[in-house]
Image (tube, rainbow, N blue to C red; front, side, top):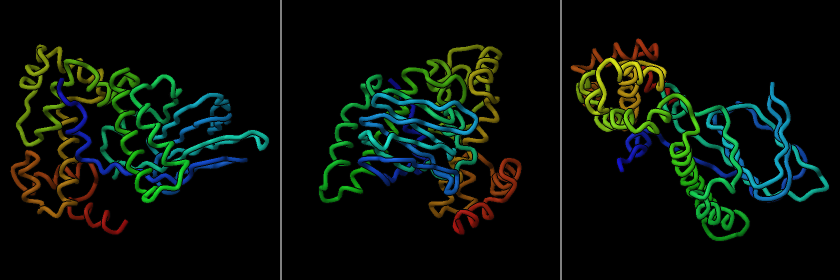
Length: 276
């Protein structure tokens, strides 16, 4: 089976930082200050989840809560009950144009018993979290990153999203075209070529792509080229070299695309990232 995730994940700097593991007592509030998403793993006990504009949710069994983007929420426990909880911040790198983040819902809530694909990693993660081994923090962070990757697999396999790039990668026909775009952004991908990869007529492919992904194939290709361009610029490559590697004739053409989508030049964008 074609690897549907590697080519797209290669261009995002997925990082996790576990900042709590153990007993929880009282209230923990999470806001949008640092721009990171959050992962919460309820191992045992009972929690109440509170989010602005939503009814309070009671969690009574082992549960995974994943906020891929920064979102205000609060976890509350009964001071008289024992609760084991692991919390981590999750960062996919610059959010602008990130098709993974755009396609994920604001929050995923999944009972751990429904995700067998995560079982072995969860066992290792909880073993590290509730012990004091050497290198514990590094191990926790790397295992959490692996868990996020496996969670994305779970989303694909169970088609948990209805639109966006992950929905497209879950579609057997669209996946072939999307994997090609992700792996070879420098190619001159015409609508006809992409439709042929998907085994569909040009008109049917265009309609199906737009309905599932939420944009035209041409717009998606442009956005993906800019995602890859940002990765290459951060690696120190010149604008001229990057332009050729993502399918633009010259640096001026890449600069126009940056200006249209991001409102700034490639060098200005890079300078803003170095400051932040």
